[in-house]
Length: 397
Image 1 (cartoon, rainbow, N blue to C red):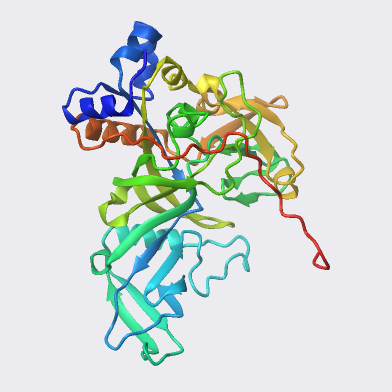
Image 2: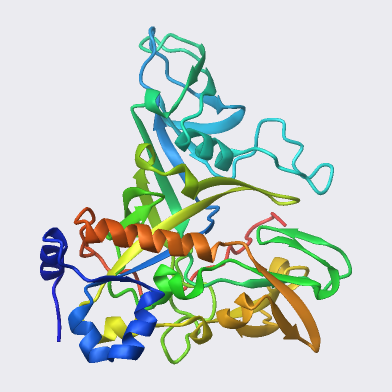
């Protein structure tokens, strides 16, 4: 039994589509069987919410009078990249505030940065822009300082090179000192463990071989209608996978874009990571069309079916040894405690399962109301792609 994208969209447009979340579909298939469920269910919604460092936005201010080609710029004292065009800038989520002492007084607090600016923009707050230029004949202005909010901008386009990591590391610290990481603060001697995934709700864990999620796929990006514009950076699909084709380590990634003027501030939050830096927590929802029984079977993946690798962030991660201490399922991790080397270790998540589930339901409601159609990818994500390391060549050490 197969369906087409056109058939599913026709049902969505007429308000007749059957839509379930990635959590609901598990019990539904258990109760009704795979064949019957594949006939009845049209779309399954997946989602994730958590820090996604490789995020940012393009902003267009419009021209001042007289005109100016901005060569240096700051929003609320956070530097923006100006090497694009006269009044276009790019703001990265991990950019630090000007004069932030970073880790000079270790561990740094990183109270405000690019991710917080993006949060404030989406929330509609007034921010200050300061720009400098060397001046040209056609762009004579050399300095500008002004207040603005997102409604004053011509465009505010979130453009994220790497989001929605398909599985990821679980972090632990075996050393005798505290370690500060992008996965949070790791206490000495394995006194805690952290991870960042929505597990059975996560988009690429429900489409492990990229059969429906690809370039051109429509996504729910913090409430806006976004899309996948490319494979994400560090997309590495040639990895170890379980019998269900789900990777047990970091694998595929997505490059996402969407209109910030349409976003819900609840799902765009700046993050301060002590001793590490700043980031952006982001909510992403992706609908998976149930084209056949194989795709349906993949979206019934459970936390107990998904493993993740435990890595020592005191030694093995920074030195890139490749050593894995253990593997745990997300069912074990979500229990809040696991046993490693005979020791009970407390586990916490950097991502929010509850917010991911909320996104699944919000996206489900939009599809049921006929407001969100499914898009067929124009290009599949690479399935057998590895990832190169940076080889240090020449005199540099």
